[in-house]
Amino acid sequence: MFKYALKSIKSKKTISILYVIALSISMTISMLSINISSQIQDGFFRVDQKYDVVVGNKGSSTQLVMSSIFFSEEPLGTLPYSVVDDIKKIDESMKVVPIALGDNYNGSKIVGTEPNLLDGYEFSKGKVFGEDFEVVVGSNVAKAYNLEIGSQIISSHGAGDAINGHDHSNSPYKVVGILKTTNTSYDNVVFTDICNIWSAHSNHEDDAHNEELYSNEEGHDHDEEHSHEVLEIDYHNHNDGEVTAILVRSGNLWNANQIIKDFNVDDKDLQAINVTQTLRKLMGNIDISKQIALILSSLVVILAIIIVVIMTYMMQKTYDKDLEILHILGASQVKTIGYLGYQNIVLVVLALLISLIGRNVALNLANKVSSSLGIVLVTDKVYNLEFTVLLAMIIFSILPLILYILKNRGNKEEK
Image 1: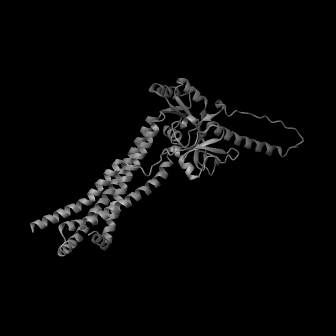
Image 2 (image 1 turned 90 degrees about the horizontal axis):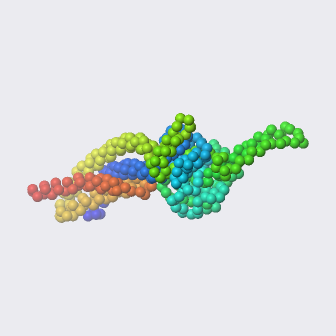
Image 3 (image 1 turned 180 degrees about the vertical axis):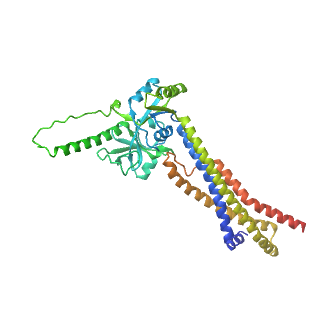
């Protein structure tokens, strides 16, 4: 009967193809809407558990969070490293981590920070940075550029524009560690000691200054002695440096409130924000977009379901002729049901396979967009609700066949 079922499907290609396309579209869109929205929400919640306060320049609180935690926006500006010491004075037990952005490697942001930012993260290879111009790279960066332990990279000025920024070829970095995949923004960035960011920028400024001096001296008599004042700065002295943001794990609500109170004052060009509250506001905006997307997705699914129903009805018309032939040939009722069931199962399995392939392709494309926002989508992650929706779609597609068989059986009993 299985062979006859396949021949029957081939004989009605148009109806079968439309049925599979409509069913696979409804399955794919249903799974994608659940998966993408859930992963974005999970991504925000994972970040929320790390740090509860961020200190930076005044401006958009959302931009401050997105630039310092997700590394997806441009920083608001710089503030002196002395602010880090001011925060630590509130409670030395707090985890206070400075962030300095301003350079990139082929478009991937280089995050100047301290080794404790990577506390709790596992390495697939190597170790955390410790010496001058050592870096730890995220898993996606390592894969994209085939980086290994000992590889050298050249940074460019600019938080994300590798084309327009000048490179720091005189200050190459050495890869000493590669992070395991975290499925967070950490997969897409490069980490180094904050002093290296300051030093790289100071070297460029020194080169520019030397070029200017050489240019000015070309027209002078070189026999004349020149004396130039040289300003030496110790770039390992944190008091000389600047940061773009400061991440704080306060440890308790009192510390968090105290930081926010001390730094959100009119006479300071600073702001301290509560990460949870900012993300909740952002999630509120995302929820609105999510609801709109779900409505549009639902309309497409409903349209696809209508097409499935129409195709099922048209296929039932052909079932009548097939059953008459099988009845003449003396096929039993069990074989008749098997014949119809095989057809439906083949079409549903084809639709399921196409929808799973389409889901993975769409997730990969969506990941390219979400990664720019600092949220990495996992293409092989499946939520229980996706299985529930798939099961409901399969039952819905089989239900008309079951009703048809029961109706046909009732008609035979009446005869």
